[in-house]
Amino acid sequence: VPVALPEFQLLRPRTLGEAVEMLARSGGSAGDGVKIIAGGTDLLPSLKQWLFTPRYLLDIQRVAGLTEFRWQPGEGLWLGAMTRVQRIATDDLIGREFAVLAEAAATIASPVLRNMGTLGGNLCLDTRCVWYNQSYLWRQSCGFCIKKDGSVCHVAPSGRRCWAAFSADMPPALLALEAEIEIASAGGLRRMRLAEFYTGKGEARIRLAADELVTRVLIPARSAGMRGRYRKLRVRGSIDYPLAGVAVVLRRENGHFAEGRVALTAVNPAPVLVSGIDDLLARAEPDKTEWVEEVVRRSNATAKPLTTSALTPDYRREIVKIYVRRALNECCGADHKEPA
Ligand SMILES: Cc1cc2nc3c(=O)[nH]c(=O)nc-3n(C[C@H](O)[C@H](O)[C@H](O)COP(=O)(O)OP(=O)(O)OC[C@H]3O[C@@H](n4cnc5c(N)ncnc54)[C@H](O)[C@@H]3O)c2cc1C
Ligand code: SF4
Image 1: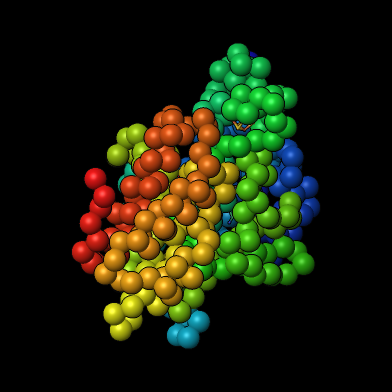
Image 2: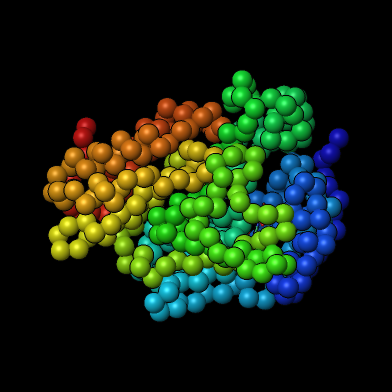
């Protein structure tokens, strides 16, 4: 019975070139080839549960350049994939210009895990499910499931796919800020909008080829200075993954709303932007509550929680509505009244 860590070889590149070459040479991250390890705060518990049995771990902690933290005027803020969560939660510039991200980072896990956990690991976090994030023996007793070692989904038994929930806190904040990511392979670098990075599939959550890794994130300068709020539901306030998370950003100019976005996490297999908010804001009367209720309605329609988590889908759905309403009202700094 597998009770200890599976055996693996540790690869420790010093440069990005070495890292992508090792990744390609050792079979890539598909199947049981290589697993990239950054802070290891999520990967190591998963290895102990035998959710992965890779032949190699590619430790990117020493790779030069992955801790970049640079404000580039006219372009935005570049953050290396190895930027620690704690830095993002406490940095003055981020707190001032991208408040929603600082708030989201501050809710992640616990102080020790925030010191170790990284931005790249958070963006690439595995999806979570009460039937999956368990010991080998526990999973074996249920006959395993589609995501690992089995053929049935206990959440949606008639289907053939995995609905595990994407449960990281920073991606919704970064979606709301219209962030981009940079990805490296032996073939070079490419950039994509973060909104295109997630697949919506619990079993294959991100659009990253087997020989690629995430190197940097760009938060565009045009998103600086927006009002922002992050609200999160969790069982233990001191240390827990989100069971529902809501990121809201809003910009007010000349008494009107110039732009705004709402993104959700932990209620779908991907973090998602609620669509159509800008159109609503263009028509919104800032002192009325109708538009707020319409955003709440659209957010509720976007959230599709299933029985993947400790709290029921109905409860998590209600909480999304409440958190979106509260976060919007706080961002408005206006006098919208919450309906009883
Ligand atoms: C008790 C506990 C509570 C937690 N609570 C929260 C929480 O509230 N909110 C939350 O969001 N997270 C939470 N986490 C998860 C985790 O601590 C954070 O998400 C952290 O930011 C992950 O970063 P890491 O560097 O440790 O990732 P790792 O564990 O090193 O990696 C995570 C995944 O990302 C991949 N990966 C890492 N870096 C890269 C890269 N540069 N390119 C490509 N793939 C990469 C790894 O291969 C792995 O699949 C919790 C973990 C624990 C153990
Ligand atoms: S959603 Fe289904 S397939 Fe996916 S981890 Fe949960 S039980 Fe397994």
